[in-house]
Length: 283
Ligand code: NAP
Image (cartoon, rainbow, N blue to C red; front, side, top):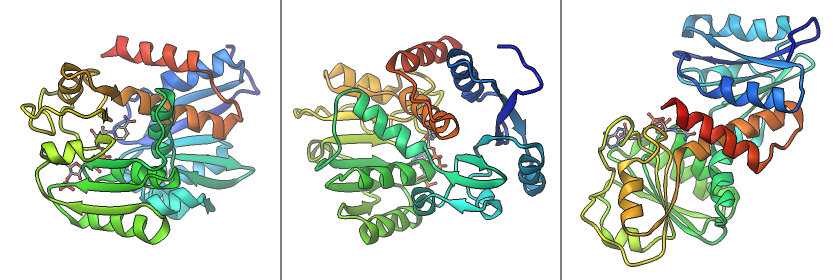
């Protein structure tokens, strides 16, 4: 793709940004769909965030992703928020609509799309989530939007977990609960979908559950940690022939959802597979 006077810009604001996979996702899609757009990463300090958002308007940047530590702080500089990003309380995607900046959150969408991609549904399902941070919050809201029957959150501290439970119970039919209790065999066999939304297993072989537990029921085990690809939790599940969903699926799908917001184009399953392979070659 040739960069010329008509080339538009999309970008990532975060700190740090140098290990981001987003430029690979978006620049691949722009080339494939012949969109005259590029994607760049900008390392933005907290102090510079307001000026950076002003620069989006002044320079006519057509869309941006937002990552740690700006996902919450940036909301106050935007003109509109979609309903789900309001419920999540964080934004990871912004579209510049003729100078008006609209915020979205595609993390939860990326997660549920990954479940749909492997042929599972969410409606009526009982779900256990480990962790109660930003990822748990966006995933929980999307699971509730999709009609999950119940969401049980387990976390070592309860403040954030209680907040998520309150949001779900006051806005959706889904019944949400939380506790600090260690996960045991009964917990795992009492649900349909188990999700690790803690960083446990990231660049380590730690596992968020006791690996000696065996389960005798068909469940789906999802790990949103994407480095390594085969986390300890995924290996535990595979050793028992349990169906799994990988962190890279969510990472790619949240990017594809942002691409669709900016361009209106729905990428194909083939795009997802190509991007997942590209990512796995980098780790
Ligand atoms: P976060 O906001 O920092 O939340 C982390 C959660 O995990 C918190 O509830 C925290 O508990 C808990 N936790 C952290 N370390 C723990 C430990 N050693 N033992 C027990 N619990 C622990 O992080 P996040 O944004 O939700 O992200 C969580 C993980 O998901 C990260 O590894 C991130 O890279 C990954 N992620 C993946 C994707 C994807 O696209 N695949 C998207 C987003 C995030 P406390 O509240 O008590 O501290």
